[in-house]
Length: 388
Image (cartoon, rainbow, N blue to C red):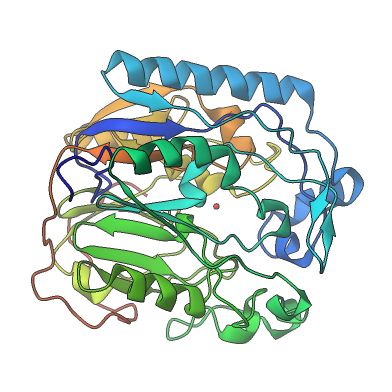
């Protein structure tokens, strides 16, 4: 990492020093599209069809705003520097030469739009047309970091024409995911026409970075990131039992070296490289089954954020998860975030940790095949009580 760079983050657990936190103000309902259908809960489909391009209920916006500001106050109280994106009215229409969109979505979840690898910021491409300009509210911050010494690069801007989408993905979906191939190519709503990457599909473990192929990240995009990061990082594609994959942070969450929190419905076995790691199984989420969830499932409850290797931000009502983490030697920090969960993210989604105190470490000295499939071994005997 460059000594004069304000950006430097290699893991999800080193002591947090500077972070970008999103804002909910100005959020709009994305217009209906096959890419939306593939990822949001079916019970929300009618809402998108009726309200695409319009606004979310104002009371929910206000409640989520209050939760985000409370979270920021806690971070700043812990000595963490917090940056916020520029205000944007997401309801404004836009388009390209090939298509138009009645509006955007939000700039609430910076984790989705950029990957921080060491001192480098890598802007994602985003597979939703409504997210085409999702990185722009963060450009003021990125330009500041670059001027102060950080590296900054953006993935190729996608065309997102009809060639980028597979309208027949639902018909190709198998009755149940297969352990050997839980997400066949034909079942993805995005094709391999061009590189498409959502940074929420990546998790950092020092020199090793995990990524899953999903409805918003294709193999073309994974290979682009792998070549960009070159010899400094090893990028491993992993696959879990999720037939509507979008982002890893409600499936496989690193806590500290040697320990991970997993979704028991999606992770029947660990990737081979994690053999010997301790596994905590996330308890059933406390989010009520009838709560409105616009973008994700109730498993967003496991979308936590490490302040350091001991302290972890957890939604205040997730009593069982709080109890499990405390029992396992962590110091949970309960923070109200339930309304933010409704909009599709938790603490990890709502943040982009641009600086953590710590250097580049190798937690998997054996390296390994960059395309390791899930293994039938690797579960530790130390399990917690037992799920975007």
